[in-house]
Length: 318
Image (cartoon, rainbow, N blue to C red; front, side, top):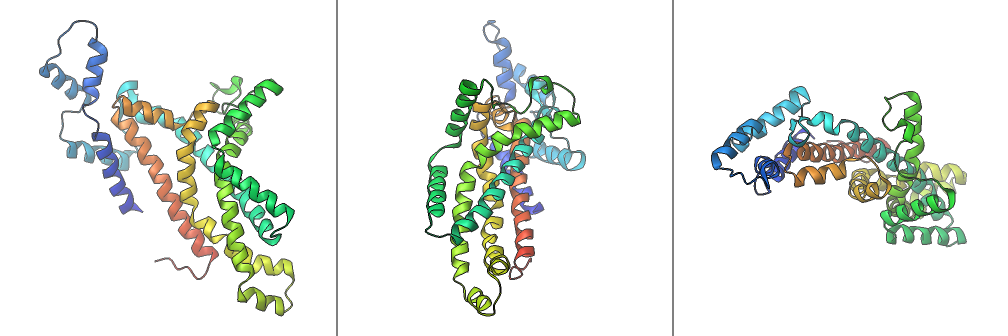
């Protein structure tokens, strides 16, 4: 995982360096635009020196990585005139709260419901669940967010947007604020879990159907094992494996869908800040966000490998 993150950090830094120009040029343009002042190369060189952009790219990369590893310092946010840690601090934790609550909803729904659909194959319930799964594949999450927002405002005179009630938005952290956050996480988690749940439900159903026809299940049934114990000991346990192995895939899906859903619901997350910082060439903010989100995907992949080895003795860690 450490080797992966090292190469990821190099790729992130390259992405940060790809746009033409730098923050010094953007800053000079905004400051002197419309004033008639002439900006010379010497002026730009001085501005770059003030922002630390005059050093060679390799030197800036190693200095950036050293500060992250040794001090947890992601650098200076040029546009905000403060450290990157201060800019992204709370939004990182709120983004992670949305991620984990969405994953929780996804698996709490998809695993038992998918198993039920497999056991009740070709029943009315199975067909209804299949229709809902197809809706999950076809209906974009942001459209579901728009519908829920419209219904809540029009018919219930309330809004499902935001992560905090107005009285807690700027209040210091407390038990009451944490509980308020948890209550507001339910709707975003359901919306973001919509498509992931549909996918995993069908995955669990298909795997469960395969395992129900396995010879081990037939042999266990012949030995007189009760149907409930049989399902838990063999098909159910093995049907979870594909879900566990795709945790990082689900996390990536959620991160990809979160920005537009956050825009609809007014959620304070990192997507909008990432886009703004990249357009502003505020490289350390953009780089920190990309690095943290990528680390979460890599960590989820590592976690899924550990869980898979724990759940299935046939899988060995090397």
